Image (cartoon, rainbow, N blue to C red; front, side):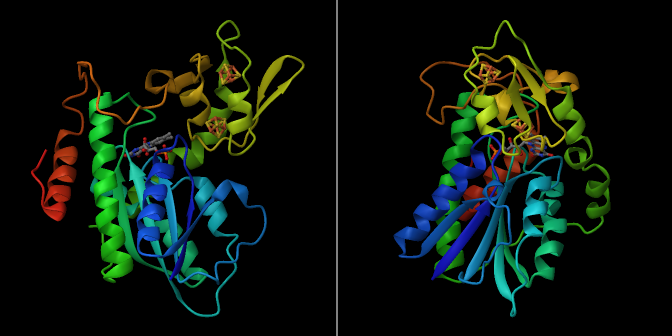
Length: 290
Ligand SMILES: Cc1cc2nc3c(=O)[nH]c(=O)nc-3n(C[C@H](O)[C@H](O)[C@H](O)COP(=O)(O)O)c2cc1C
Ligand code: SF4
Ligand code: SF4
């Protein structure tokens, strides 16, 4: 079997997840090609693959706009082909399960039919910073679940489904903040000169080339996809993110068991949905609940 996963990642969580999938698939001698959606300009041909996956971080209860755009570049297949979705988010809410509804419609028109869906919890890159302990627990659970999911789906041919409420679709369509406000957000970004060390990491890593450095000045265009990559990875935390400043998260998570004590200021946040995620995971994995 040969599969492909086309993915977008803002700050690396989705990438860690698809890499784990590829590693697990390889264990069973399944070839798994990984592609970043931002690397494609022209038509995309998926006819060589037996199954095609799409992976993304959830942005305002939807798939990122860049994924939708990418999906429209896929060449229509002459016969139906199975597809699967990997969504990664900061909250395991049922509403988030519906984030692929528009993507699914675009793919269906190309004869790619979603037969299996997965939703992994990974730490926030916006809103607030999780503690290293929580980030590590999420990372460990994603790894364990991916191992099981790859085996069940690709070897035992058991697809996985997420609980969805059709009524939610209209609601999430209305609050597609990223799709509506991302260009504006990109324009509002600015860099604090005193803090910037001109490493150019933000310029080089922007997936849509929205940041330009000319005549000793940074310029931001209208193409932002609100991925957070620039402000999250800036080594000196030099970004001012306008009205989303109180929600800015800066600095990579270590994804290691911390050897220091942290105060968890957000213990109560999404408590129920996190508990449900770990309960469902431990039921499936046969481990003790967190
Ligand atoms: C603009 C934006 C909107 C987001 N909206 C949501 C959301 O609606 N629900 C959620 O659970 N997480 C949301 N997140 C958090 C990300 O989905 C989460 O941190 C994810 O792990 C990031 O994956 P990445 O590192 O591959 O980009 C949002 C992040 C950004 C940047
Ligand atoms: S990543 Fe940060 S420090 Fe580096 S050029 Fe951009 S703003 Fe400046
Ligand atoms: S400007 Fe920043 S947030 Fe916007 S797309 Fe580029 S890297 Fe992502």
